[in-house]
Length: 141
Image (cartoon, rainbow, N blue to C red; front, side):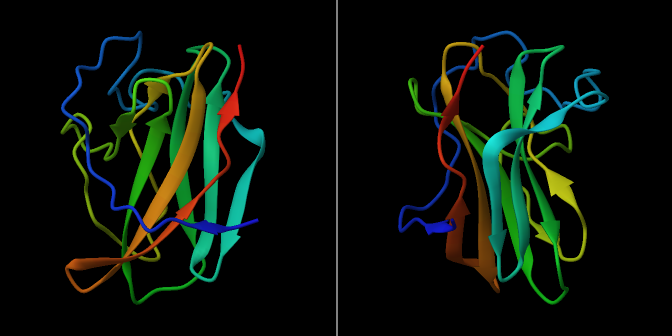
């Protein structure tokens, strides 16, 4: 079930204070055995959005697999309880980065244990955000 959110995404000003917050899941060694969280896959007209889970690191991140080219997008993970958001995995912490489809991209990670997490992809029309798709909030640990 795809959900379109009218709210715009932005990294919050809150500090990243949980284990693994803001790290690239591949560089941190968390992506090797990662799985897509149960019930956290959303198919959109632009591709597939997933909330990824690492049992090893107890973290989540968003991953987007575009199904076509010709658009730009940003990928996020959100932690509900402290309203923390994290985007790009290019080494810039949790700032947003735009990707050109059909590049597969993922966000940096946030610690998940005892929190509720959600992945988001923002589809851009030129330089402007146009559509938002999100997974349901998933909790666990």
